[in-house]
Amino acid sequence: MPGLAGDDIYFWSATGRFGADLAGSAVPGGILTCARYGLETRDRLATIRLSEPGAFPVVRQALILSDDAAAWPEGAVARLVCALTWDDGRRVAPMAEAEVLAVLGGFATVGSRPDPRAGARVRVFGPGGYRITARGGPSDSAVVLNAIWVDRLATHQQFRFRSFLMGGGG
Image (tube, rainbow, N blue to C red; front, top):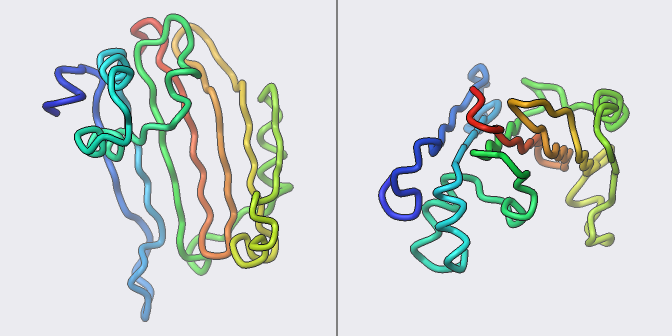
């Protein structure tokens, strides 16, 4: 990608939709989006404000998170973020909060927090809705699993993760 991503050998972005057709629904069963970028793009982004119009295409395409640079571990050469969203509970059953918490035991910190707009909690999160953040996941010489975010909202459920590729590992 020309511009901010320049010749970043680690830069790519992909999106796909999945789920069986469902009569009367124009919404896909789910959407998977993943994006990776390397040190070259990170360093270029550090020289500009992310609100600049020229930054928007790469910020959107690379799924830039506001704290990527601060979270970047020493020795990492690239950052990968994936988001899996399913919009239709008739095709993919949403996971209950207890189920999600049970699989995040390998993280240094795991917390469930309410929506900061407490008055909108029921409307935004719906019955059984939640937001979970897990940080400090498993790591080795090839990859650091930095964080996982899980939101179950009234309209959909989303899982996101951020990891870093270490020292040129595959």
